[in-house]
Each structure stands twice: as C-alpha cells, then as structure tokens.
Image (cartoon, rainbow, N blue to C red; front, side, top):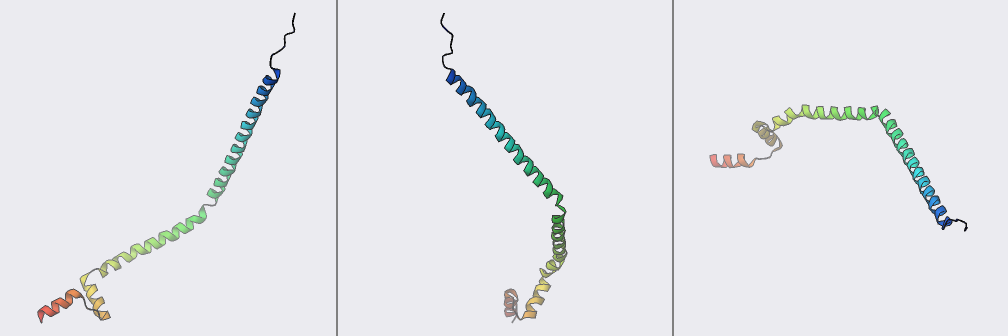
Length: 106
C-alpha cells in the first residue's frame, strides 16, 4: 500500500500564507483609514468649536452692507438733473446738452 502524500504541499502552504498576508494587509489599511477619518472628524469638531470668531467678521460685513444701503438714497439724489447741473456748475464744467441749448437760444 503506497503512502498517501499530498501532491503539492509547498504550493498549498504558499496559497494559505499569501491569503493570510493579504487579509492582514487589508485589515491594516482599514485601520489606518479609520484612524485618519477619526483625526479629520476631531479636526472638524475643533473648528466648529472655534466658529464664534468668524461671526464677528460677519457682523462687520453686515454693518458695511447696511451703511452701503443707507448711502443709496444719497446716490440716487445725484442722478436727478438738478443735482447734475449743480455739480457741473460748481466745478466750472459745461454739459454738452446745456451748451447746445445756450447756443441755440442765442
């Protein structure tokens, strides 16, 4: 009776060892990815805790937009024809339309 030996014991051991190596490598990668994700989450939480400082910048931005809104009526008054004539007369400039009107009336 011949002894029953496996035909390729080295190949089988290499396959099992390779599979175990690959599984261990994947597990280590997942652990590193989870650690990196936890670090990013803690960083985001720290940034959210420090969020009140940008609120002051937002309120300053809001104040500047409010002051711009309050300046709009003054700017709109400059668009009126009377205001334009006063501003041009004050600086000694002559409007083209006014110049042709004075030359036509002469």
